[in-house]
Image 1 (cartoon, helix red, strand yellow):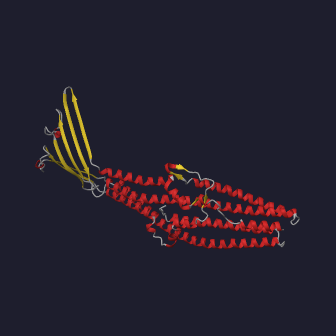
Image 2 (cartoon, one colour):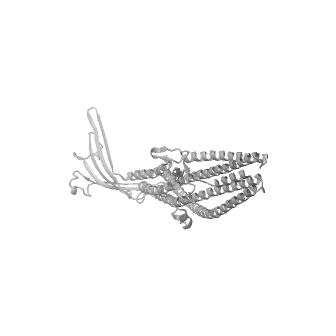
Image 3 (tube, helix red, strand yellow):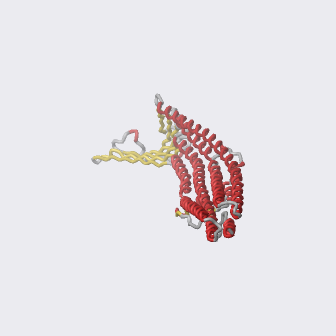
Length: 467
């Protein structure tokens, strides 16, 4: 029995987790998320949303760019100049649909249309074109620019939501890796105890202190622990490979997690600091400032611009144009009201069925987003409230499991003492140890759920932290 007593005491001192000589190879949670946010291709892809919005804004502003137009045509047949016509125009579109225009006409030819006849040195004109109905207060150019500006602001919020989701997914994988590592260290320590116990009992059989059947029972325990250890190694390997999906360096270079790299087993303070959990749990959530709500509001504003544009289409198209004419544009007094070219155009659909249909569709789109905003507000409120309560529950559960594991350890110690005194059996010792293993696995699982819930709260608030 003295062999059993010595080896069991040595074995028990090995119980628990350790990180001997592995401190320099620890991958901290905040460092890991920092790599993800800085180098992961999908995070960089999220930044393209901003670039896309800037490009759309530039495109919409292009509708207000000045334009130069030149129209030249000539016809000559059987040595006769039928016509030679040149028309050059410079146009400046303005915000309220008014278009400023300057033009030069130089036409000649035997068969030239009389209305196109101009002085020998050409004819200059300068004037404006004004929409008096449809297109005065809002037009396609104005609507496109307003919507592009709104899309740019919405894109920034969508980028933050997208990055937050990537960081959330990456965090869950880290927690999974940490759980697998903790389980591996647990089974490594358990196997050491089982092998020490087996060795002690085998020595006891040799000196006649233990029955032969106890060696068999001890060997079963050793093989069971070996099996659990192998399974935990596979689980850790899979978790490490999954974690490698989120590890990249500059220039889109993927990084494979090295076998000697381990997670930080004391990650809770770092997780709380990275996610700013204490503030997220205590502060009252202002849902109207939530990125998702703000994004939907920008979407609603954009649809309101579209609705106003469709409503403006119900007005008749009335376009008035007036141009001063002059042979000598360098002399301003030559521009007078006696020489001019002007006109008025009017068009108006009789039934307006297309325009009324477009307006109704625009209103329906607005209503759809309004319903989405209402539903999103309620869902976010309930989700955030539930997660905060869940965190409170896991805090209590962690305290319970810590106390439960401590009691299991005390029970195992007591059972081992009784076994040493010949008042218990190896079966009861193994049974107590199995209960302890179950308790520690449950504690590891609850810790993982606790961390996952913190990540869910971080995700539900769509925080984009500075890492």
